[in-house]
Image (cartoon, rainbow, N blue to C red; front, side):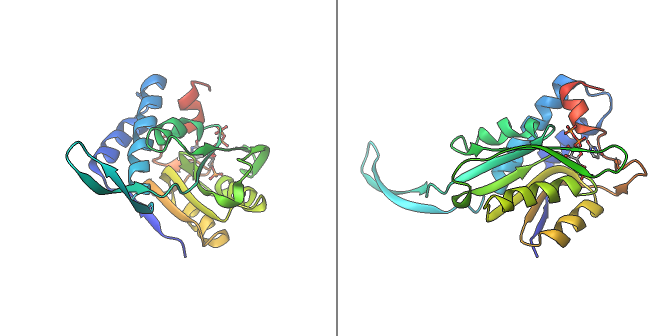
Length: 209
Ligand code: PRP
Ligand code: URA
């Protein structure tokens, strides 16, 4: 079973409080999502492999560490996942960015796919799939299906707010996928919103309603 990692870093928890607050406006919401995504990316890259290289410092030769050049891909689930991409790219600027477009049918809550574009060397990359919300889990499960169908072998899912139903859905369908979460909330309400959650992430990021 993939691991479920809930971030307890004080900076992440502090910023998430303002993201949740309904009085936080679009500009600040977007900035905070960007900042939390950077902080989460710092943690998520903790196990990237390193190799030794020899360099010259101004004083002497030195054996120093460098990333092995492992190929990474970031895939936001459109549209709300877009708000997390720049924050991650600040730390791993060489990553390629794919896109999976899905929206939740408001009646059935089932995901409808409308767009997919991935890097051409999909089989060689490790992917970080990002979306601020993991609610029923339908969108994440479908996006992972979409990546795997195109050859992706190593996928990590990263979101801001999840609920137990969404985590269970990923674990049931994709037990190989590790899940990184800033907060695990209590439940889903009858409309499929996470409680207490933060509302509609896409609308709050883009100022739509
Ligand atoms: C939201 C959110 C997730 C999905 C989560 O997107 O960004 O993609 O709902 O819900 P689920 O786990 O029940 O599938 P939405 O469908 O509202 O589309 P948007 O990003 O275009 O606003
Ligand atoms: N999508 C959102 O944007 N928010 C929720 O609470 C659930 C799904």
